[in-house]
Image (cartoon, rainbow, N blue to C red):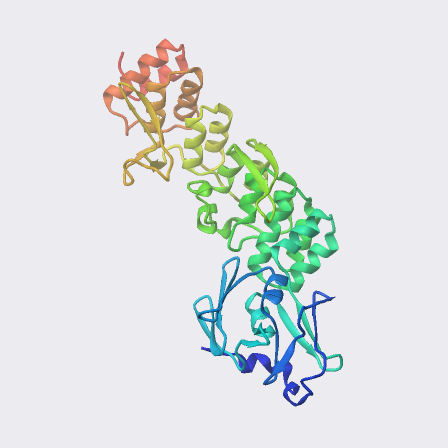
Length: 408
């Protein structure tokens, strides 16, 4: 249990003051105008219920029958009860020096408890008898971005000091399509690149080459930071390396702090970002190679194999074929979660069920240029590939297949 008497040290000496003297409250420098004045009880300043919660972006409810007060803001839930010195913030029990009260028909709550529970900082100025509240939330940061006020943006992040909020600030800067100075300012103010979300992965996903280059060149990220999947809750990241994200094409819906759409962008594969990553020690994986193989991207498949992907590597079984056709899956919806196969086996299924110049080119790249072993294939599968190589007029591939034991 957290005892609020310790937190209230900043209000020491108030109990001896004349409680009839006027008490003021400022929030981020702005004096608050309340319908009823703040009051002092047991060294605790109490303010009107709804006004303080709403000023700090929370939404309160009051049940006059049970005298219970509840409020929420983001992931924070607050519970108080008139006359009860036990409150709760999420699952944490808090003991109050002074509970909420009802006076002359108005409900009052302890200003410091409410403010600090909502992430604000509170100070007491005894000379002016003013409660000074400073708070930052994602909506203020979003407003600074809309105003194009870089200094305000950085100051808000620094004032708050919450890594989670700083992480969100970088996301918002990316979504507002701000440049490197904004990302740099956020980082200098203490925002983490990888926090509750991975903003490095997000920058790659949005194909923000300027931001990716800055983060790499300034040493904010390196291959030791963990995979996108390990450092982000997003299912979008599953199965992809950072280079895989540079390859991945997607439509990005960029939103503000309220969830309103700012822009829609088509993020296309970027060799520029992939080369940047490779130059700083990041490597493609066999799974990255598979995705380019499955999408019949001959240049990307060749690049992946030449930049870290193992031509004899093993991956989850993501592609199936039968007499009716070919079926593709992602790592999130595998029909056989434990099934695995070599990259050459995936390439075989694609060539067999989707015989195109691209699938045959990728097969030749895998076997001839990068020397993938055909041992995982059955004799019948090798023979089938030789038949397809002849049909598609790929003599170099046909010769390699014959050397590996394929028969006419």
